[in-house]
Image 1 (tube, rainbow, N blue to C red):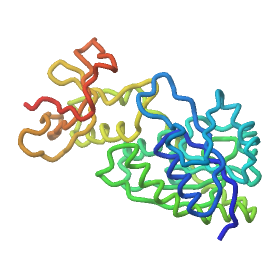
Image 2 (cartoon, rainbow, N blue to C red; image 1 turned 120 degrees about the vertical axis):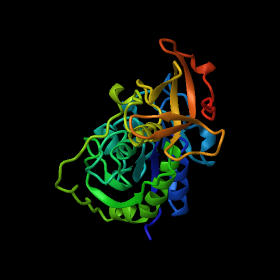
Image 3 (cartoon, rainbow, N blue to C red; image 1 turned 30 degrees about the vertical axis):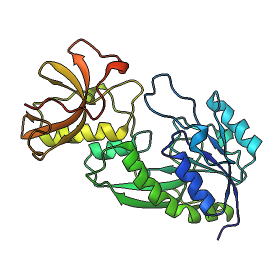
Length: 301
C-alpha cells in the first residue's frame, strides 16, 4: 500500500470533486485542497462550493487559470489529481506537485480527446467507453497512461451525472495503482500509436432535430446532447412540435404507457417525446426564469 500522500484535487463540479476526495481519504491520503473554477455567467446549475467538501479540505477558486500553479505551490502537494476541469492547466501548474499531476479522462485514449468524450461516444453508437488515468503534460489528453479500463455505456444512462457516477466508480478502483506508479517514478506508458480523435462541444449543425430523419438517429441525438450536459454557446437538441420550440430531454423508441408523452412520426419509425423544456414559438425565446421544468411532459396527442 502506498504511503500517505498529500494530494490536491483539481475539479470544478459537485459531481466530481467530493467523490474523489472521499476515495483519496479512504486510501489514507491527505487531501489538502480542491482547486475549483469560477461559475460562468451562463451556467444554469450548481457549481462546487465549500459546503460540498468535508471539514479540513480547503476550496481554492482561482480568478484565472494562470493562478492555479501558484495555488498548488502554496499547498505543496505531492500529487494533483484532476477530473473534469473545464480549462487546460498550464505547464507550470502541471509541474507544481512534487510527483506530478494525473488526470482521469472518460475515453479509451487516444480516442475522444477533448471536453465532450461521452457525448461523442453516444453520438457514434458506442456501447462501451474507456476510463483512462494519464499523466498530464503541455497538451490536452496526450500524456502517458498510468491505468485504463472500459465500462458499459448502458442505454439507461441519460445524464452527465449518471455517466459520471459510473466513470468515477471505475476510476477510483484504479487509483491505488496509479498513485503507486507515481511514487515509484514510473513515467507511464505512451498512448497507443493510432490516430487520436477529437471530441469537441457539439455545434449548431447537430442542435436542430429533423423529424424527417430516422427515429433511432433522433433518439441518439437527444441522448447525446443530454449526456453532454450544458453547452456554453449552443442549445440542443431543439425540435418544433405544433409550431412551438422545445428542447428535448427524454425520448423513447418504445411505446410508453397510455397518456404518457407525445408520439411523433419520423422519416422512419416513431419516437415518443417524454420530457422537454418549452422554448416558445418559432422566432421567440423564453427567458430562463420562465422555462418549463425538466420534468414537464410534452402535451399528449
